[in-house]
Length: 515
Image (cartoon, rainbow, N blue to C red; front, side, top):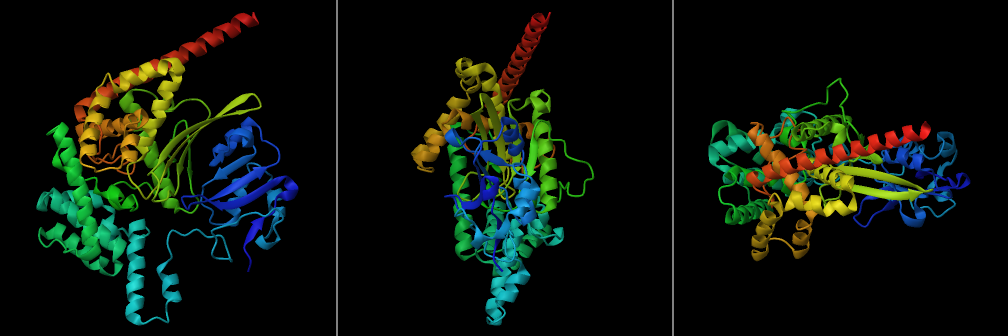
């Protein structure tokens, strides 16, 4: 059976599925006539990203996952009536505009699974020798556990309680030993799944009995040792500049960031919103998740995002809706991000359409890398503060936040030591020196420190480790981060007061004109 797609030539449109340089597949819609600014706002809420310059309003990309044709119809219906889209349904071979439709290997349906199921793999390799079949199926099982595909918590990786498991092991064996053991089990799941069950069960027994950490060998051992060596180097860098500023555990508990495992592996047993009947309150933004993700993940992550936003607003002393700039459409997107790219991103784009400016703000995070949301939310708050003061005042606000608090001086000192140790590439160090990145990392640090002060080291009040992870990585010390937080409070309040004054003045002018 041929792959089905939509021929929209008669509707003045062209729909494609293309592949980015990163390897990620996405949907692209090209239109003959530009849409209105209002339509661009509506489209942004469904994950559509508009092209710029001469293609503004005429070309849009969407990185949301497509698992069935009905979802594709729903995605495109913001631009065209559903009946028009369905009328164009046809075989790919009959498309008239040379459309690219890539990435679908199953011609029977458009399916985007996280990994192949155990059953489908077993079916495909049934003619192989039994010992080979068992090894392959065991590797699939291990991969599914990394992805969080195990519905039974008792059988999930680290029983979906990895952070508390690490804490128990650290208390029994020491921080470095516990870190190396858990990193080793993760590496076995990644590289040698046939050994996973044995070493994983041994690790759980060690946490219960206080003896018998599993022995990790081969490639998995080298991977675990490399992660530990990197964390040792980070500790040396920070201790060289600010000795004693953090506890030992704050350096080593960041090891999960070196593995792409599902966020629920770490605290899903402690924080679980999948069965909540209420709706999460995400003030001032629309939460959008790729259709291919399980419903439980989408719901759970929406609640966690809500907790993070409210926790940040409460800490800064403002309403949740005031954290981000009021301009344009604000979207938080839970989606897949290739391993070669950043863990998440925050973007603010402005376009001019028909004499009107259209602003789209987007934060994207993934369920396979933890702790990025507060970082990206920090970028959004930074944009809100500096955008509120205009281009002329922005440098002055930046100096107050980075230089007046000592953040820039401290982070640069860490980077100088890192540069001398050749731990990072010059390109990455230059990235870390960017003011925007220093601010985002300072938000991470200040909220982590705030959680420690509140005796909530794993950030349950703020959505758990999926939102912000208690780690130390080239960010300001707790004392400096506290100054940063107070300065941001003042700057954000000044921005909101200035914006309110402008609104009141505009209302006053309008009243005078109408008299």
